[in-house]
Image 1 (cartoon, rainbow, N blue to C red):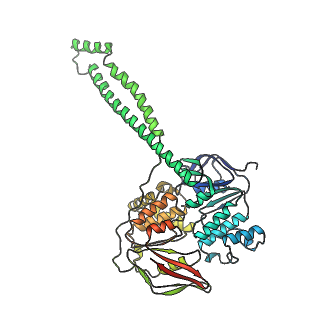
Image 2: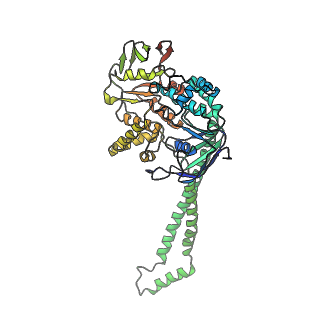
Length: 501
């Protein structure tokens, strides 16, 4: 192909089960370099990536792709094709990528034991090694610790083709992207600059549109009030002209009615009303066209559900295996009813292993804790959505209210076949909140969530009266919500956990 950019021309796409298109009338160009695709969960960001890489075919319009394209999905259930070839490769590019992203020789053989952060690094290393003309990344920093994130950003800067990036990582979007497509159905607007510059421009535009709408609404209401007054005048005039109720032989009264009609004095109200009706219709049309973004109520309500027990779980000092000859050593651990604990450490240090150990030793009823795992596979996501669809009407309404307040559109979610990972996490949280939980355990809670949803989640958990145990590489998220840190540090023969207040 001759062009060096991705081109969307009047693209429309709808999934079979949806009542309306997910994306339509999409027309934009994406040049060489990185472009961000941003928007709320469920608005079609992943669909745009798959259209841009040939994984989906538009039902209308055309997508021009400049050569070979690779899409790296959010999920890392299976090892990427060619991982084994990359590990064995001896060329300079392979050595550089394996060194920069920390890909080890045994990763293909022990894929099922790798952390999700390690899997993500392997996935992206393989994609870069293949040297495609188009590379689309869906949440590439999910599960990746700070050091690996910096190495990944440095590697992606060297990519010479057209890159598309969907991410909740503001720092990565600002570091890489020269423009961002802001998706908010039914529209998608390309804005120059990185995410921060585009978001500021979008905010200014939204403020301008809100002022326009306020002006249009004021004008419409003023005209409507005047039209109502004139309708009343016209009605009174009509009653004065009417001969209804007059005696057939009352010729004087009938003559006066005829004279009033001839002079046309009372008809003036009707003519003025007719003129004003057109102006009201025009004002109503202007108001209808001056649309502004719908703002969901931020935060979610969590019931007062603090446990009356002394502790939610207690682990005496000990150690647990991490695989092979490695072990994780930890001191006495205890979670009070209102505890707020951050569990941190590099990828592969044993955070998820410790969580699994804790889950078997909870002092909390089964229906009183919520656990959101680091990853949920596609089959489980579909099963969770089906379980939600089968809820009684009142419970379904309550769950969808929570989903809405976490910045997703319930109608689109219920129509989907495969909920996105971010939407699946919102569904699980919504179902858990209905239990009035005593303890919420979340493994990488901000992964897969869009930026507004992360803010909503922060606000919701900030007011939560129950215990929180959060595993995350998002330092801003942990700083706001936790009061104690359990830090795991890798050592030569395993890992050790320390407590920091």
